[in-house]
Length: 379
Image 1: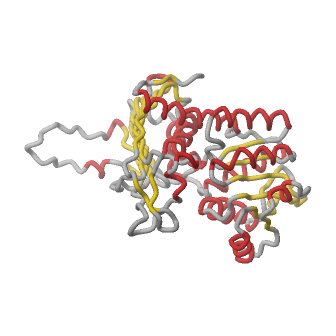
Image 2 (image 1 turned 60 degrees about the horizontal axis):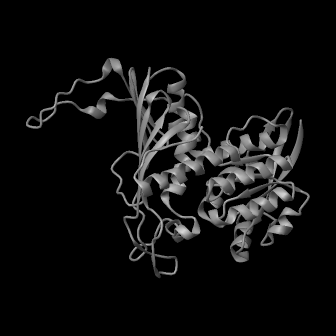
Image 3 (image 1 turned 180 degrees about the vertical axis):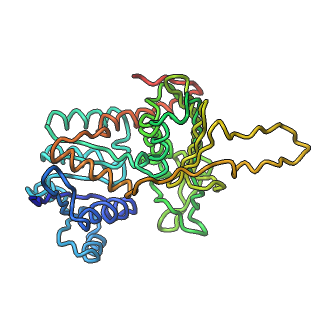
């Protein structure tokens, strides 16, 4: 068995997502377990850290005993030992960096959204196709343990005919005046690529497509509930991007998904994101890690009577779906798939063309909100 290294330039590792999920829990975790098995070989990723803040990069590199880091993106892309470029910068910085990486002949992998508009993502996809480089976009929600259990139920026919989906995502992001915000300030500035529609509709696009099929129509209302927030320096600023969105997605076969997304909601559910799928033969509720079911045979028979307390413990009627397998970190699992795709052309569904559909759904959602119309999604 031959051990081969593959150089991966990681841009944006000084941010929370780039550092925790992509560097530590994916690339370094894959190295620690010995690499990725590809046929008779093992592929070991060798990270090159890229960013604008030399002090932060140096500190991260020293913390993890990584010898290679740079603030010079051109130098990183000119490195012959680098085969893959990954981008976790702010959305507004993606196009120029990904274009430069494609021009340098690097395979490209990006956090979503790949770009601010579907036209820009499609341009990148076509550019990468013409250059003969492989491309991918992060689709982490499909790799969550709870969602993988839900997919198992769908594949096994548990639901019968699927009727509807109800999704709840979000939590209270502090404004930053008396407690620090959990998200960076650019998320709330439209001019910097912020907004929950742009951020989350990309997720709902690949998630619904991967579970039930592509979205065929959208009706949405995007709002900014919190008009003023405070940035990382404690200075107030106007929130120009939406912080909440309420959407109806229509899919083939009459399936209707209602999904609420909000950074201005307080959580009273088991997990920060939950999806309930109802079908003729049963229902399931899936979150980040857990999934519970209620088959038709044990569904209680409530009767509406607001004057009499219900004797039914509705939560007790649901059953846990067992793991039945070991669930690795979802970001790492997708990194494994992408590296196999780069190395030997293994199938990879989440390319930039998939990213086009996600960004297009976000754009149509915003158009629906502006015009108050239901909008069909082109096939």
